[in-house]
Amino acid sequence: MSMAMGVSLTTLFRRKKERLIRRHTKSINPYLKEANLTSRLQFCISMLDKNSLPHEPKFVDMYNMVHIDEKWFHMTKKTEKYYLLPIEEEPHQTCQSKYYIGKVMFLAAMAHPRFDEEGNELFDGKIGIFLFVTLEPKRNSKNRDAGTLVLKASTLVKREDIKAFLIENVLPNIQEKWPKEDRGKTIFIQQDNARTHVECGDQDFQEAASKNDFDIHLMSQPANSPDLNILDLGFFSAIQSLQHKECPKTIEDLVGAVEESFKQYPTEQVNRIFLTLQTCMCETMKIGGLNKYKIPHMKKSVLEKDSLLPTRISCDAMLVQNVMNALGLL
Image (cartoon, rainbow, N blue to C red; front, side):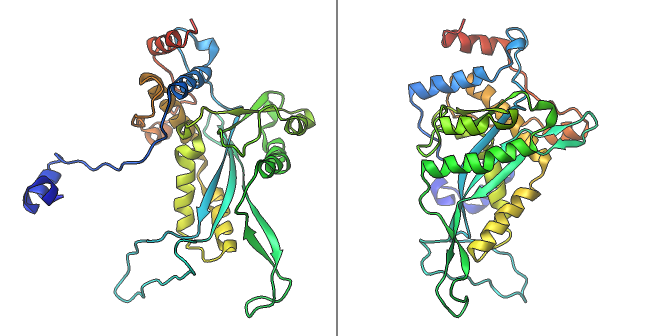
C-alpha cells in the first residue's frame, strides 16, 4: 500500500490512525439488465402492505413466507489462519487434491420467527435444513467392513431431486411446525430462479401442498437478486462460519456440523435478517432497482433490548409514489 500511494510506512500508519484511509472489501454482484431492474422494483412494491398505501407505506410482516435455497458447504478452506500458543502443535490436514475438497449440498427453509408481547419465542421459524446425500455400501477395507453404509454427497442435483425434497421434506415440516393460529392462511415458499427449481404451477407440488387443509404456493424472487432472500442475505454465511469452527474431517462430520450450526443459530438473528431484507428493499427502490447500495444499520440489538424492535419497516411515501409512477402502477 505504501508503494502504491508513494508515501512512507510511517505516513501511511498516521493517515490510517487519523481514519483518512478506510478499509473496503469488494464483492462481485450479479449483473442487472433493464428487465432485472424493473422486476426488482415490482417485487419491492409487491411486498408493501396495501392497507398502508399511499400515505404511510409499510412492508408486510412476511409471517406467511418461507425462504428456501440451496448451498454447498465445504469441509475446509484451501488456506486457514490459526492462532497458537508456543507449546501448541501446528494443525496438519491432508487430502488427495486441494482442488477437490469434500462438500455437501443442503437445502434450507426458513420462515419469520414469532414472539409474544413480552418477547418470548413462540415460533423459531426454522423449518429445516436437508442434505443431498445417499447411503452406499462400501467394499472391505482397513477402516470399514464390506457392506457398511456410508454417506456420499450427491454431485448432480436435478429438478426432480429438488421437487422430491420439497414434497417429502419441506412441505411436511411446514405442516408440522407452522403456528396453529395461522394454518388457515395462504403460505408462500419463495425460491430463486435456478433452473433446477420447481415451476410455480407444478401440479404434483400443488397436490401435496393442499393436504391437511393447508394452502401453500411457490413464488419466485426476481432473477439475479440474492439480496432479496434472507438465506443469501446473511443466514448462509453465518452458518458457514459456525460450521468452520468444528473443523470436520469426514462427510459425516460435515453433515453433523452444519445441522448443529443450524440448530444453534439464534432465533433473534433470524428475526433481524427479515428486517434487514426490508431495509434492503427500501435502498433498492431509492436507486432504481440497482444492487449498488450499503445495507443500512438500524441498531437492532439496542432496539431489541429496549423492546422497540419493529416487526416491519416503513418507507418514504414520496419514494413509493415515484417508483409506482415509474412502473406505471398509478
